[in-house]
Image 1 (cartoon, rainbow, N blue to C red):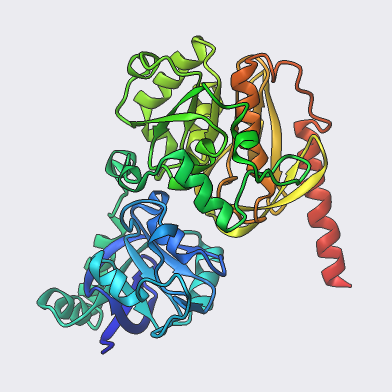
Image 2 (cartoon, one colour):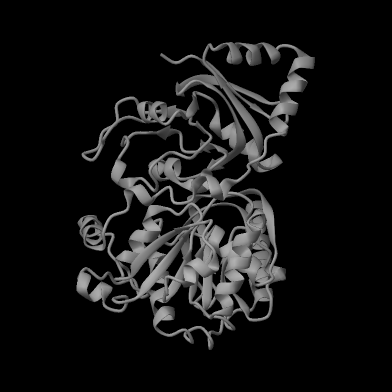
Length: 435
């Protein structure tokens, strides 16, 4: 039975609702994600470490819990907020309900609140810390009582504001290792749902021998900062041998594996906190090791090359983020989960902006012409298009086979044009609204 629960934001706003999942009290960074589905992937994505996640879509849990869709072996969100959760899910792959899963993972949930109102607060004020209080434990009772006393509430808000996500990458590295499978199994399972490799021209490759031909005999180190399992699957589907190494691995240890390329994974937290990893990437670049970075890996690669990063007001989280490929002019719908971005104006010589977010103009991809490396902020493995940008893994294979592949890369649009494009788009949109 649902019990009393609420979310207390650092600005003093309180959203009252009901408890589901585990009960208790938990503090985290309150964020929202706009995906209409994919809640299983959200819960198990290590990039959400330290965060209380709000789903903007009103009904969550309708297809249950499907272990084969996990991105790691456990849930990593700090807390979970939904408008309504489905008590009787229906799906032929269903392996349980959302409430039971949260209980097993000791994740505190909150439901029956106005998630639209909460999302508007986070959009207007920016992400902020929050605390979920639920249940009837002595701790919960004390915090509920504190909300009724102005002086005690101020102390509670001070406690909430003091929370900081620390040791994020170290806490989640290699969390997907336990659910890793071999290449043959991965391809067979993917083919069953038509999630086979998709080329840049949009054609699918259903023949595993053909799909894996160019990657056969090549070895890739997946430097795991909290990698989603599907990144490894995409590499395997292209015939690459994948060796997963923890975030604590040094460049020397990685190079000792004699890799043909290095995959820099996604992960949580502030990229600038990872000084040792950034220095390690510099060593890999000095050895001209082919590199492909995704999300946090994209940011760390940029920092290693001398660029700078910034924290976004409320981040990009969801499966409907539009990104423009500047060399082709094509816009893709991408899946994203990040609170930081690379500053466009900080890109060094030899770094070409390859993708831009058409909502806010932020950097979504970089191609380096002075080293064999490229990266994207979004998740090409996350099937939001659904498979539009998975061709980037083929680009990685091309780079491995020819480290000079990117040297002659020329974007049709310069960085300043990307910013101009964004500004003109916003201006025309506002004009349409006024009309």
